[in-house]
Amino acid sequence: MTGTAPVPFTADDYKARMDRAARQAADAGLAGLLVAPGPDLVWLTGYAPPAVTERLTLLVLAADREPVLVVPTLEAPDAEKATGAPALALRDWTDGKDPYALAAALLDDRGRFGVSDNAWALHLLGLQQALPDTSYVSLTEALPMLRAVKDAAELERLAAAGAAADAAFEEIRNVRFSGRRESEVAADLAALLRRFGHSQVDFTIVASGPNGADPHHEAGDRRIERGDMVVLDFGGLRDGYGSDTSRTVHVGEPTEEERRVHDLVREAQEAGFRAVRPGAACQDVDRAARAVIADAGYGDHFIHRTGHGIGVTTHEPPYMIEGEERPLVPGMCFSVEPGVYLPGRFGVRIEDIVTVTEDGGRRLNDTERGMVMVD
Image (cartoon, rainbow, N blue to C red):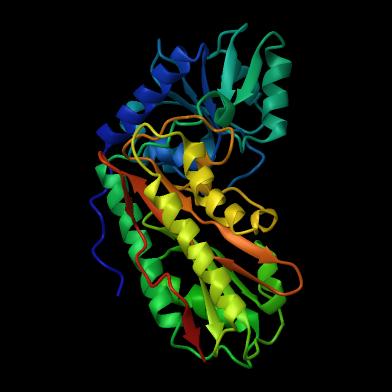
C-alpha cells in the first residue's frame, strides 16, 4: 500500500515561492538570497542537482530582478527540466572558467545576503573573494520561517507521510522483539516505511532497555530482552515531505514504575498538544509539556526541546523550546515529543507531528499512545 500520488506542484507554485522569498529577504533588509543545492533549492525551484559536487550551483533571488540560477554547463539540461525553470534565467559556466565572477556580476557588490545553511564554505569564500565588501547571514537566522507555513498541498503530503509512518508502527508492533537485535527491528522499520511509500528513510531509532535513556541512540547489536522498554523513533520522506513519530513499547509486562513514567510522558504529550493554537508562542508548547514532567519530579530527565518543525526536511524551524517567542500560525507543522530518560535504566518518548489549525491543532499521527506490549 503506497496511497494515491499527490498532485504535482506547478511552475506557478514555484514562481510564487521564489517571489515570496525575495520579498521576505527585502523586508529583512537583505540584498537577496543565495541558495545552494539542498532542500531550500528543491522547495523554491523543484530542481535537485544530479549530484552535489565542488562545482558551483547557486540560485540568486532579489526583489528587484528575475531569479537567476547559476549552474555548470554539464548540468544545465537537467536544470532546464525542473518544474520551476520557466521562472528562472539560467547562467551556465564551463570548467576552467571562474564561476564566482559570473555569480558576482549578479550581486550588489556591497550587499548583505542570506545564504542557505548547507552552502559549501568553498563557494561562500569564493564569493567573498570576488566581492570583498559583501556580507552574509545564514538563511535560518535571516528567514527562519521561510518554509514554516505550509499550504494545503504541502499539508496533504505531510498528512500522507504521517499516515504511512502510522501504518509502519501498526505492523512493527506485531513482529517479535524479544531475542532479536535492535538493528534487526530497525531494518524491519525501514522496510515498512518504504513499503508504505517512503522514498527516503532518515532514521530508525530502536533503543531498548538502558539504551532508551539516550534520545539519539543508534540501533546496534544489543539483543532485546523480555522486560525491556523500547523507544521507537522513525521517519523519512514520502513524496518529498517528512514523517517523524515516536512510540515506546514494552516487551512483556511492564513494572509499576515503567507504567507510571509512560503515563506521565503521555500526559505531557497531551498537554503540549493542547497548547497548540494560533497566536500562542512556540515556547508555550514546550512549557506545557515540560511542566507536567517537572511537577512529577522528573524535570531533570527531560533533556531536549519539545519539538521541531518538519516539511521538506525532517528537522527545520520552528522549534518548540523556551525562549522561542515566535507565534504559532495556521499551517505550521512540528513535532510534540516530550520524553523522560533515566540513565542506565530506560527511557520513554511519545511523538506526534502536529499542524496548527484556525482554532487549535491537528495531529498527523494517530496510533496508540498508551502502553503497547510486544512479544
